Amino acid sequence: MNYNQPAGPGPPGRPLTVADVLALPVLSAGRPQVVTGSTRLDRPVRWVHITELTDPASFLKGGELVLTTGMPLPDEPAGVRRYVDELADIGAAALVIELVRRYHRPPEALVQACRTRGLPLVTLTEDVNFLEVTQVVHTLILGNQADAMRRTQRIHEAFTALTLRGAGPEDVLRAAAEMSGHTVVLENLVHQALICEPSGGTAETALTDWERRSRATPPADRTGRSGPEGWLVASVEYQGEGWGRVAMLPAPTGTSTSTASPVFGSEDVTVLERTAMALTIARLIHTTPWERTAHRNALRDLAEQRHRSPADARARVAALGLPTENACFIAVLADIPTAEDTAKTEARLPEELRTTGTKALVGRLAPTRLGILLALRPSQPWRPAVEQVSRAAHGVAPGATLCVGSPAPALADVARSFREAARVAEATGPGRPLPAERSFHERSDIGLRRLLFALRDDTRIQDYAERQLGRLIDHDTRHGTDLLSILRQYLDAAGNKTVAARASGLSRETVYQRLRTIERILDCDLESGEQRTELHVALSALDVLRAR
Image (cartoon, rainbow, N blue to C red; front, side, top):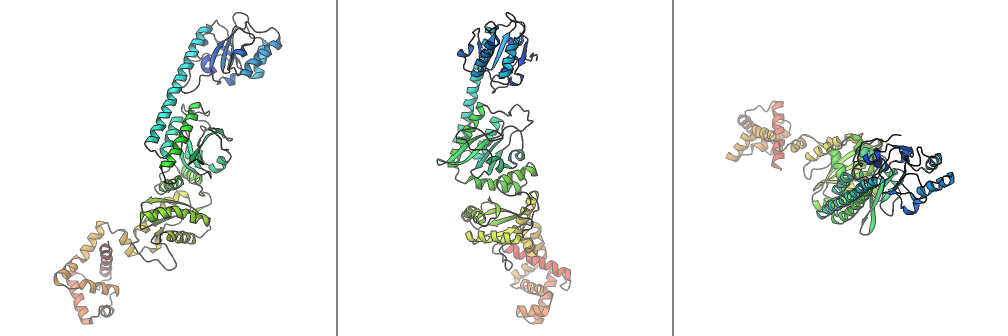
């Protein structure tokens, strides 16, 4: 295997490897050939050691690239094997032999011994200045170490700055993912992924089947790799006790970016350790439970369709413990009179639902509005489930108003269900009476008056009411009459003058006379069903506008 590659010490932040050293001009001039261990050239080189001793291992500590002319090699195969065994046992990175002075081809015993022990054996067919090799490589190693120290210092400074400005967990994980080039996930003790910052992949890739994969990854006493996927994990504490952990995931298979590597380096460990420390401090600063924040963010993302893809949405929601397969979803909005009661309801409602086995996400969407997403079996009736939620909410906040959207057969339809619930809420004024045997409002409750209430801020509604009734209201104001009331009673009686007279306590002749006056003022025909409808709509709009 010829090794005449362009010069270069390798990417910054990665230890110098055997392959990197062989690619340096000072060694490539010797026309290096890898005889054994070609798959192990990624071994890090800690130092370079020139030796002509028969027992070089006694002067090594591991990780050295050993350079020799072959002069000290024993003649007998047993001695060669012993020589190689000592190098392999101490952890030498590779053995480089110059085939210029004693040998012109590597001894077969040496080749077999190196192959048996998995020690990379490299031959040089041209004369090389070993002293120059050590100078170049040691300069690179020391330079890399200095660079590593500077990068580590920058990591510490970055996380210190985050802590000093009171950064939340999302900011901390985002910084960790950017610094490491790896996906970083924060989970609690029951293996719910609360925050995921993908890097080099998607949330779907990182979070699919999260709970099972997480439970297969045992906790570690200190920051280190764990589990079948080789996650790098660190514990996060709260008030001296374990609260959860943060996991850094290996790069997805097939990733070939320079920032993502399937192997974690020392800097990744430093990043994760500082991430865990910053999260521990942030947990003390930010008193709102992070599970609650995770639910809020998930609900907002679903309601506003802010996910990168439906698959990402499913993965994130499933990682929070909500079923996403074989489920039907119902969006509920709970409007609560005060922010204080809203906070209490947000804290207690999930506990109430857990005791009944109801799967739901609960989170505050506005100061006095909660969003609730129920996950039900497709065959499960949804109204009893919403009724149960409504009773639980009213138990905490008796003045709550709950509005529900129509069922969503898939998570991708949840935004529509939330929009419908919001429209019901817009059309439901304070203290609006509920249908019998129901403690929540739904779309079928929206009639004309509710529709006009929802549209009350539209200037076209205001203009319509004024055009239809303004002249009559002005007449009543100037003359002290009450023709608007007579018109209302007439329209409520569906145009029956006798019923209108009875409701007003006036004689039929008086009612007839006043209706003619109304027709004159409004320039209309009250015998026309269409015009009566127009006036009735205008009166309903006026009632809504006056009730503001």
